[in-house]
Image (cartoon, rainbow, N blue to C red):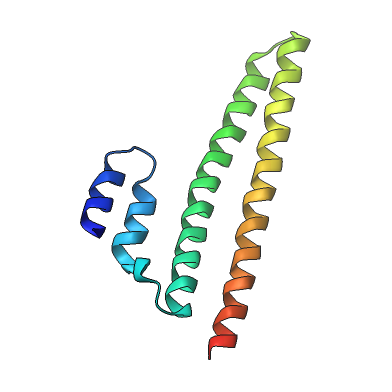
Amino acid sequence: MVRKLKNALLAIPGLSIVTAVIASNSAFALQGTDKVVNVVSDVSDAVLTIGGVIAVLMIVVGGVMYMVSRDNMKRILGAKETLKNAAIGTIIVFGATFFLKVITEIAKSLNG
């Protein structure tokens, strides 16, 4: 069952990280809190990695847009909007990851 799920997820681009988490932990039996905490921790690490890469790319794209916009105010405003959205997205990704780390640490301490 897990092997079929792994193969199905590998066929879909972009879900390879989820597949790696499933394959590395084999935690879809989810019999204890430790496994749930490990899955949440691994997923939050993957989200942080992907979100960080996307944020850097968007900041670079916004910066390039700003540099090549010259005196075109419409393009300048578009570049500033891209940079603003990249910053907001970065804050959301880091905030969500921090929140999940806190929750997993609380769960680990309660579990013993």
